[in-house]
Length: 503
Ligand code: ADP
Image (cartoon, rainbow, N blue to C red; front, side):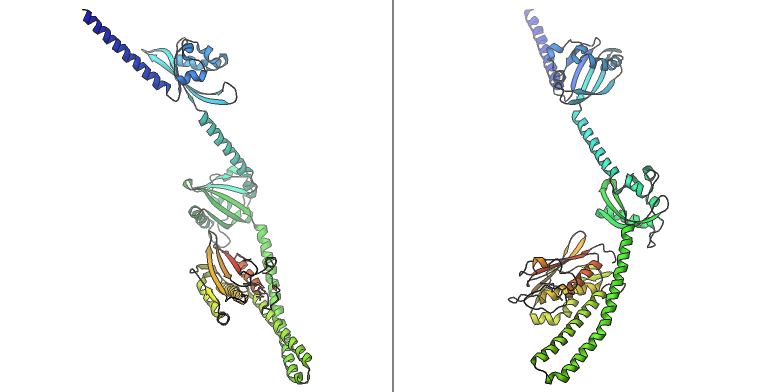
């Protein structure tokens, strides 16, 4: 009997221990949940809470157990939450958000509360409370909203006309764009296409829809595309715009569009081109006409020389030599000026130019000079094919390599390196030499007509070569500059844009 009794006791004890273990496991699980969990009975008295829950209120579990919810959360919050409690006790699940200041009041925490009714045998015995701290989520959400507001303000208030294009419709239009396009409101453009702001055809006869499709595709493929665009405003006015499409979110096929009215600049450019052309034809005519009397002076000086040379003393003969030299020099200058004003006179189409071919032609023309000076011309890498005017690029090489050989240092044989560097938007032709170099204070004016660096030693020249190079670079939409240290050689760099517009 005694044995049986102690067996039962042992079984009970084991059972009780298992239960306690189970309870400890459950408490451990609940305590480690990343949420606050509590239980309130029908009388709104606390029956359970995990660590996080007690921590949140700053009350220790032993004290809180059995406390009324009003005493735990305070009168004001009780008043606010009471309707949810009532609903939960009616068996309706509740969810709501709360902003709760931290006990020291320094910041606000955000919580998401769930009241889950405890329904057993069709009766509500109380409700579980599940509170998640969503402060981080909320703060991120607010930061995101803040930055969205900042960028929206930046977009909306930018002085540049900006549009957003997604897939095949406008999804954004700022105030400046609406003003430029004379839209009655920004919204009218949203959902619309480029048809709304363009005539059916562009000035070159290409359908606007085809051109824009190609430009949008290019922006998606290479990141951006820049082009001129004939725009039509809502009230039917046409203007030339420069349009820049930039891909900002490839997966959404989202493009940022900048629209600039360049009609005024175009008008100025056209006027400038007209007056330049006028000036050039004037220079051409004048230099052409000047050569005739100059030839006459030179030939009469020659006749005079033959006739009187015998009867003149040394000084007299040198006067005639100076006069003949001067006439010859003037003639060379006029010829150079004529050549300069001829650049770009003929209307030509740009073509694909094999730079290697252009350079070889230039080297052929310089053959005698190169041989006589024993110059070495090195082309370390094959040169690319660019879009441009073949004869002008040949002339550019001829002038630059010719100068590199002419302005050689007396103590070393000339060595000229010709290369072409590539950047995303440009080809850069580089001609460098080991010659006498150029003083820093002279480098700025070097490309002006007739500018020559004055040196002790006289070098034959007219001061037109580099001015011609600059004109050629500009005709290609590019630029030219020099890098040099006096006495240590010079490097001339000519940048040619890859998407060249005809000049
Ligand atoms: P020109 O050679 O007929 O004088 P350019 O216009 O070709 O005229 O050159 C202008 C001036 O620039 C030259 O007089 C010369 O002083 C300087 N220059 C040009 N190329 C070089 C070079 N590679 N090295 C040193 N100086 C140069």
